[in-house]
Image 1 (cartoon, rainbow, N blue to C red):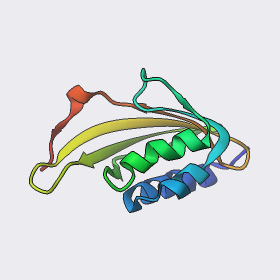
Image 2: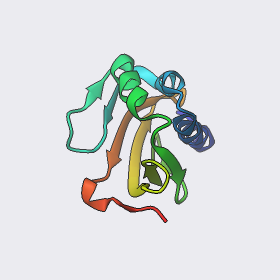
Image 3: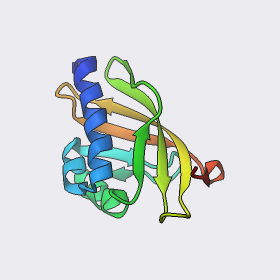
Image 4: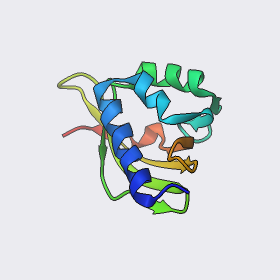
Amino acid sequence: MASPDDIRAVVNRYVKLMNAGDSDAIAELYTEAATLEDPVGSKPLAGRGAIRDFYAASAGVVVLELSGPVRVCGSEAAFPMVATIGPEGRRSCLDIIDLMTFDAAANIRSMRAFWSPDGMRPAG
């Protein structure tokens, strides 16, 4: 089983890569057969290729910031974030909670993002 420190390191790397716009490196954090459901309730994506395509549209466009501690329990992690979206002067923020599961090597097996459009608010 991956250690809590290893899992936290992957979460921090995920946030850093999102902000850098590196969809290829983000996809490499996932297992080949991983799933992604963002937001929860949408059709889950399966496989690293589909996950890479998803992040190609959002990495570097959405700026993430951890807004609380990464909580690790066994092979799962839950963490709150604030996403900032939009051009300067018209930015919006959205509170998100991500839930990720990990394999023994701390690769992401699944990611579920809890958010809804009604949570969007002006940045500032």
